[in-house]
Image 1 (cartoon, rainbow over the protein chains, first blue to last red):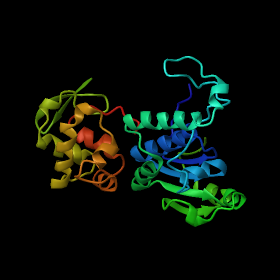
Image 2 (image 1 turned 30 degrees about the horizontal axis):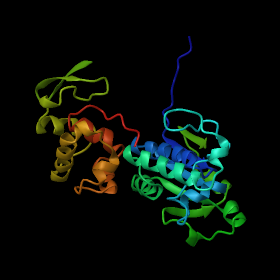
Image 3 (image 1 turned 180 degrees about the horizontal axis):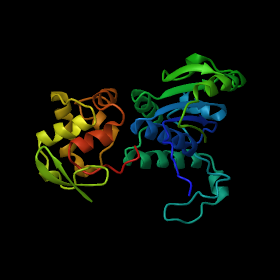
Image 4 (image 1 turned 120 degrees about the horizontal axis):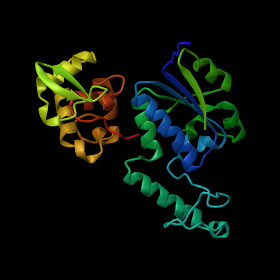
Length: 167
Length: 101
């Protein structure tokens, strides 16, 4: 029999490329969970994920009410896509989702980033996506350490027991 | 479930070393567990531990401790390096919290 040897995860390098509530929060929960467990966490926000670290948008993220087959009404009935297309519905649903999360002590994005960085987690923004969206470093929240390339990010992601996670 | 003698008291602990009966806890036990985690407890630690024991039932999170007015989150990490919530609850003699935040 071969002996099974597990290497504990000691470090996570996460890449967040989408800007919906669920994608961003998946990243934030996992990153915060890592620092809570005493692991190293580095997060790289790119493409629409940049919304999560943009001062103007970070606390106003939305979830998709159109083209989201998992979306349900309160009570569990399917949520008709056409209803989701009505102006204001997406904003309302998203606000409801954020308030539900708040009840579970899941903080708003900026406070979540406070928590992650307080625990030693590091936040980075993608240079290519920044150029593409014509964004400047000043548009980003103060949690962001630096605007870097994916190559720079990979160079920080190595080491025994480290994992790269894409959300 | 396991038995463990800490600070001369025979205690029921979980597989991860958390006290199963918080009422058996005292400060000597806290110091002993903390020593295993390489933490020397000071007054600030005990303030946090007191808060944690008082709020054990309410679903503890790092955020709650950060809003306790005793320490901010950064301070909490500094007091209990390498996993503040899991370490502080272990030292405080309460079950391991199940929270993901």
